[in-house]
Image (cartoon, rainbow, N blue to C red; front, side, top):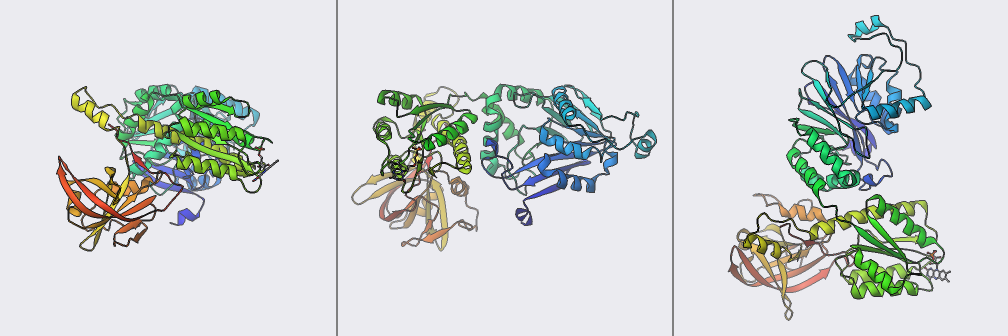
Length: 593
Ligand SMILES: Cc1cc2nc3c(=O)[nH]c(=O)nc-3n(C[C@H](O)[C@H](O)[C@H](O)COP(=O)(O)O)c2cc1C
């Protein structure tokens, strides 16, 4: 708990024979880079192998230099450090290296050939402070082989090369160049079964978990990390995976986030799938007008964020575009963002025209976004947002409003919103392209076609013998209007709860973006478990729990049911109900078949 109060620390733990992980942690967003936009903090992972010879793998960047070196010195006599491996070279890391080398004067720096070019250039422009004098006698006392060379020692590691540290730690190096890190190296240690995977298999997440026993909770962060870092270099990542496949690794030790041990095979398969994914073009229409340039500045920042996340942006200044051009652009794009100033209490007429086109001819499956600058009342943005929400468009980011000229913070928020929008778009596109089932049987075709029927995600909550129960369902449909009634399809286990006349229950309709509730109620209830521990609820008038984070709820009473195949269909009448979050969007379940 205490570590959450500290903004930075170094977590140290043994992860294998003679092997320590030193994770420099920050709970803050480390940098203003798109990959940190989920704001889950990050860890810069370093590793220390203390065999006959000692190697430090990947010292962290300069935000951690002092705390890291202080901690490292607690675990190793730095004079005796023989190797420092840089899996890739960046300027941040060089700062720590420059502080470390005078403390570890006998250490040889290892990196790939392209890494050595960067390193030499950095040391030429900003030379290393002179290292303490070294001599063979002192080296011998320390148990180090030393050839008397007084200069900074750099050794280029080639693909396939090995380095024997003793005690079975014979490191195997593989170069894994990508456009973003042309100098990247991965290293396998057979003594521990650890593959030091650098930028592969990581996540920008900071918490107490050293390993990935909570891997299900990491899936979105891992995917986000992949999308930000690797999506645009998928062919090179695929080649890297093939190169590393020979190593029988039992643990991946990445540069960021938890080490991968419990979900190693799963993450391997995920990476292979993500690399294979048809990089379907993602195109967003950025529609705006700007009388004095303020909304225009916001549009520029949003466009930048979208493009950095790999999305094609079609910018349309509605002042100059014809309605046909606007319509055609919207048709080509899977999402749109609309920005407007407020002038005399309204959006300018050109924006009203664009909005009319959207509302009359754009399917509400497209992801939308709203932004704009205003002076005092800002009606235009509110108006556009409410029209889009009422029409059922999902919003890819929370609407952004700037008072007059946007500040640097607002522009940063716009750029970040661009990347968030790209993620929402990707998610929506994935949901709309279900995985093919294998084979071309009639049953497979039926399953695929049936999966196109989507339902809102709901949690049914009820009480049985004083015990509160709840389960997730997406098989809900309105069945009657007067009186209002609905049907829920339930499994045979769940039917026990609802197949009784007049039994009350609450249907909690979930909100898009609240996947924690979904995950919670997805897993089966364990005997004796309080299903609602840690979940905020209030009691409905019928006595059943209402989930406070739901989008809306309906208090229902069972009237009838029938067995249908492997399920029961329950008909219930709705007695009361309320929308809890008028601006939220209903969460939908798109089946993966
Ligand atoms: C003629 C005029 C009328 C305006 N009317 C409103 C208004 O009714 N409500 C409001 O919040 N801002 C109003 N504003 C302020 C603008 O919305 C604000 O200056 C905004 O930054 C303009 O954005 P732009 O630079 O993208 O055109 C008005 C500005 C002008 C010049």
